[in-house]
Length: 555
Image (cartoon, rainbow, N blue to C red):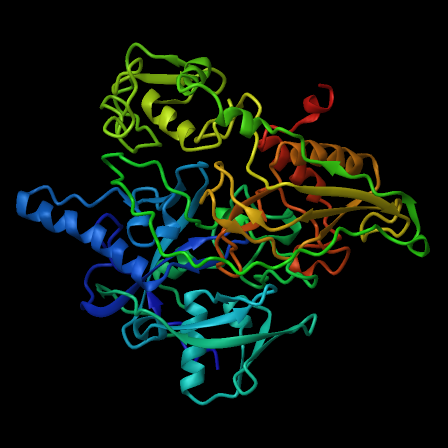
């Protein structure tokens, strides 16, 4: 069957992208742009966003052909196509998606599919996630499923595409072949992907040897932000879906999935983005009451230990500072350079450091000139001082800075986590892989509320789905160390934030914030449970990336 049903993708040249193998006929095709998540899966942008990317690539090239330059756009602000993507810019030369307010970078790619494929018709196949929403399959899977569906097949096996699932078209169910866990699937019509041309044959078999498929075989490079551990790295033989069995405990904030927080506006290389959209007010849903902890019959050895949010927070204090403080923060952590490096770019505004800041039209400052360049004192990375000022003014304004290049933190970083409660208890049952000790249980409880000035939409309600959330650590020396650091992260409001759920697409809701937790005790098929020998080291690294280290415990 795999030979009969092809994935139907291929490669072709595009302005600003490598050209395909010459000598082939020009074929009609559709272009699909995808970004790589922390599991190594490629997630397609919507058809309307892909159309915008293609137009942004072609317009400068067409203008360049008339003027003799032929240069394509080097950076594309996605907020102009979709307000939920406002913080994101695609850098074409490096094929990276860059989030301006956090510095997060992810790989992107462009795949071509036949014009009569699912992508060309705007047909999307989706699987039901743990929160009841729908998540799209990778586009090559959508194309494969549509081909099988139109051929009248009753079921297909996705193992040839690297997924451990059987699909039943009669009952519209996906079944995990190992755990036998079942999910609903659906077929939905959306905007067709943009038409382009391919100067090479589109492949028609799973085991295609075309240049693009060889370069993009498997799941591609694994980023340093991979969710749990190296033993769970996705591969061409198994790419797990997020499948938490508990109530809505998937990692909603993974990968900084787009939300409607305004991007830094005014840069010449990234025009002011339209961050206005008709957001539907979320329906209030009451959060469950905080867990009283495990009963005595389950072997509780330590009572719940509430960790309340400090009042007032550093964020609230920072919001009341004088207007001059942002400039003082920038001057505190950056040293102004006498001469800017001629060939280096400022990765905030995408302009050359030797040119004025791209935010000089939008960010007014009497003491910082548009051409001023500064170097961070620890990591030595250089940026326009006005760009750093704009980045700081667009964040929490908590007196700290984080290098958008290497993530080095200057000062004490705080987040935007809503008010809530963190409770801790222990019990004697062991976690898989940690049979020599008991288990630490953490219960996070956050209720719905109103967004503050540090959140994406101040004054609007936010929801808190799936609370209380239960998380687990081994009760050994390293596990207790992680627990102590998680307490610090909680007090600094770094564990959760308000944004858009990556599984349901709901905006203005509480989501995880880059510090990953184990929400299942066992059966690590989903990546959310144990055994996982690398998890504690990985979460320590994630905490350190937020400025939460052992040094914090000695303060």
